[in-house]
Image 1 (cartoon, helix red, strand yellow):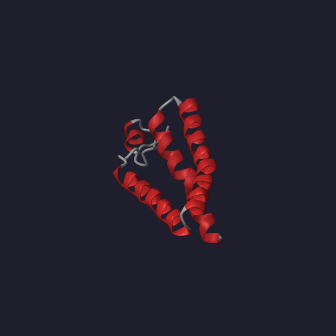
Image 2 (cartoon, rainbow, N blue to C red):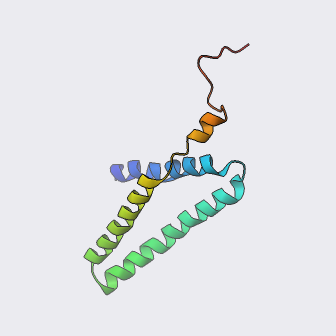
Length: 100
């Protein structure tokens, strides 16, 4: 359970930071849509996996979950870097600059 808790800590923070980097001032609608998509997945996911288990087997449910995990892994690997927008806008303070 501790490992599950540790992994679930990244579920909201990592995608949230990517969304925050991309939206640039359109926060309300984009964050709301992102949150609703996550909530829909938490509602539909267990129902879908339960149906797979009932009609097929536990193995089919695990294979389906693994397939979704592989898709997420591939998509996260090809996701472009979003941190560059911070560097371009000087939102990260320069340690070499002296403040007055």
